[in-house]
Image 1 (cartoon, rainbow, N blue to C red):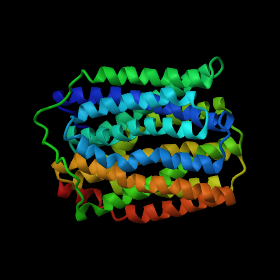
Image 2: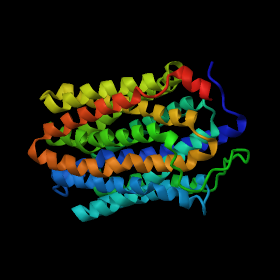
Image 3: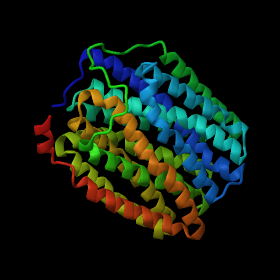
Length: 386
């Protein structure tokens, strides 16, 4: 039987649900438009797209600053302000259809997203116990998927009537309004253990750091190049991209809660093993197929497997000191983005030689991740540590 959160914690769940929905709406709206915008309006190629994706991940690398921002602002306020910033970046994107302008607005949007996410993860792990945190994380991912469906459908319809500038502006300002409203809602519980407000690096967390680093590496192949492959090689129009996002998120809406339950039933090691073994075949499909049907299916499977990464954070929750959660989420997010900054640039250079090399390399990363995840203790051993 699933454990239920305490009544006080339901306010935090509602708060995270609202901000997660707003963040997802802004990010998904931006993602639905940006690749076609870069190709059609700015004339960017594979190398420029790789550089853009690397720049987009720089704020993730700087997410260590979250630790120090928490010295002057509460986590819940920082989460709301980050969502506001995300909306501002998305709203401005359509006004600057050139490489430097896209980089600027992408950085603004990205600072918002990458400062919201570690705080979101931290509050989830702090406010919900080890048995319920995977369920909450799964439900939030499910809500995010539903929001993505709405955002993709929204863009799909608007694309017939509005230009890129108007669509970016409408998406961004909607997010700004929600984030600003959440500044006036306080869901905090005074009984939650206070968090360390300094950088925490512990040797016993090394496996969490390694898994997080590898997740960042393989995720960036997907973010930077999988969709670009569909647009450049397979000629997906903006309506085709948004339709694919809708299909993706219908799958995730139903699958995400099941992943949370699977973590509780089978353990983190089993769930992560499924993720990385599946990704190996997905990346090889990207590398060698010329079939639109196969590459589309691979894209959907890839996105579905990505949600298994919930298990990395719940694994950390089971081995960590409660006071380490907030700073460790920021450290983990920064480690994740070390690879995220480097991989797209090298991937862009490899793309210039042959796009197949990018995805063969990604398959190798999946193998490395699989080896690491087999070092995660079994469900029973983690339960004994709790």
